[in-house]
Amino acid sequence: MVKFIHTADWHLGMQAHFLPDEARARFAQDRFEAVRRIAELAREEGCAFVVVAGDIFDSNHVDRQVVEKAVDALSSFTVPVFLLPGNHDPFDPSSVCRTAEWNKRKPANVVVLEEAAAVPVPGASGMEVVGFPWSSKHQLGDPVVSCYDAASSADGALRVVVGHGIVDELSHNTDDPSLIAAAVMREALQSGKAQYIALGDRHSVTEISGTDGRAYYSGTPVSTDYGETDPNDVLLVALDTDVCNVERRTVGAWAFDRSSFDLNGEEDVTVLEQWLDAVQSKQTTVVKLALQGTLTLAASAMLEDALERSQMTFASLNKWERQADLVVAPDDADLASLDVSGYVREALEALRKEAAGSGEEAVVARDSLNLLYRLAR
Image (cartoon, rainbow, N blue to C red; front, side, top):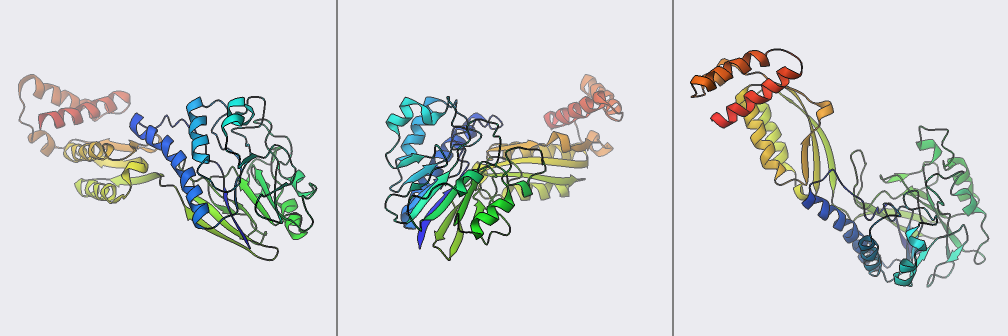
């Protein structure tokens, strides 16, 4: 039984422009730290090698500092690491993996899969890795199919195929020429042309149905966006001719959350406050809130205070404007509670009338009322 780690979609150098500067720096650094945790996990579990199924870098045009940090993180591995260029970092003339600096600096145990040829795994007799790299951002043809029939490096070798792309049964775009054929994949596994297929591109851990647990997307080791299912993991694979055991191991900590709240009073705002307070890892959590309902000025001010406090502790917290339908409707108690007179009182009454209307001017008036209320308090 040979153990190895299957991972993909590191996206080193990813530019998270949606984050504030401080959180963006942590987000970038945590991607390198995840690589080191994978190296540590490989040592702890006694793995023979590691495969990275595409998109090591977020782009072939990352800064030199990103490349240097990548080399430094890869130096943490004590076992062979097989890297497959994907659609974000294709093996084209501009590839990071073609530069003189990369080839001079990369550790000797790091192998870039440059063609669909069987590569024996050093130190793991009877194991081989085959991967077909993307040569451009727009692949023509199944990027995995040529790996099944590649000449073996040794008789009876166990073959791990490494591929990047979308399996046809998981895609809504049936015209995409780069789709990976699930039926061909199953036939290759059943006929013994491959013993495990390590896939990348899909950021959620996904088992390909009908493969007897021998074909997976590993997901991304650090979450990158909303909508990813169970990211932050890598796969620990134990493989021999007859058995394939796959277990998930968590290495990342970032989370993206889109949540909706119906707010129609101070009690509802309190529920939202409690939800925000209960989030455990605020520094690595990105939240987008869809808020609906109608609030008085007092409740709206309470909401804004809660959001301002949370924005200081979360990596990022914003209202989801496209899904927002929150109306601020001042009542008599709101206005009576304000100890203002003269011009300010006249402005208050004018804003109140305008806020009762519709359109952009009414929205501005409601926002102005809310601000005036908070200042006057």
